[in-house]
Image 1 (spheres, rainbow, N blue to C red):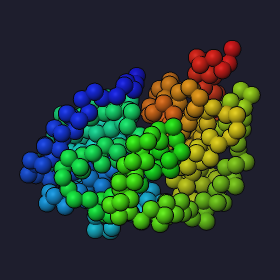
Image 2 (cartoon, rainbow, N blue to C red; image 1 turned 30 degrees about the vertical axis):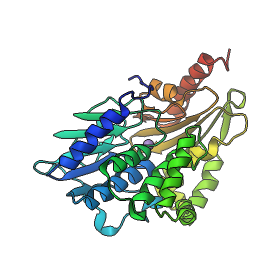
Image 3 (cartoon, rainbow, N blue to C red; image 1 turned 90 degrees about the horizontal axis):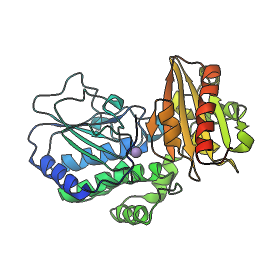
Length: 331
Ligand SMILES: [Mn+2]
């Protein structure tokens, strides 16, 4: 797998075509995102779902949200996963780097694929992939503007959530001036910003217990250029936590002074999942691609099936070492 990280030159042309298609749709529009949904996956799909409903469309939103995002949707908005698509359906897949990563419904029939992962395979009848966009929620914001749906807080709140989470709460390198302009516009549409920011940072007591166990595994490599930590299934059990409670540890690791790569390992039943963050010209995406995964230049991930932690560490360290050599940080 390789990555095309160039901006999409036909961004507006493609988005206008997608908007016109959705406006003309008569059957149901099924909206799904990637597995292990994050704030962008949930926020962009829920925002588009609410906008299409407001437009009078029959929309179906399929999502299994992590606990920290469960306050956003209303109970009646959930739809169970579909084994087959309804007659005459249009499928919208958001934020999913590949068709295999999309969950909730089979990726078949007429598919609209909107994403910002450079490694996206550009699947679907209509696809718009722009790796220079900080969040798919930014693209959905443009799409909702083109659909001419009047903004309200119910639509603006999940869209802003996607932007906040994919920019690391306005801290990552993808936090462009445009991000602030769009965020300001969404706040003007009635988002209760301070309340949303507070609510998004809530963590259950088990999270703190798990944090104490995970911090015991922090290790530095290559003279401190790489910082790693891991979570095992028994730690999750001991803390009484959910697997998703370890989702943002990689964000904590990357604050280690002097490091340019942070890798967090998650032990799973069938292998190991790694989350990778990088800075200063180092590409997390290249490291992930070398491990069979994908993602963005500063944030990427991979799944190593069939490996335990002991086997995963040297494999990942070798991939990081190769990238550190490529950029000249190691001889
Ligand atoms: Mn995203």
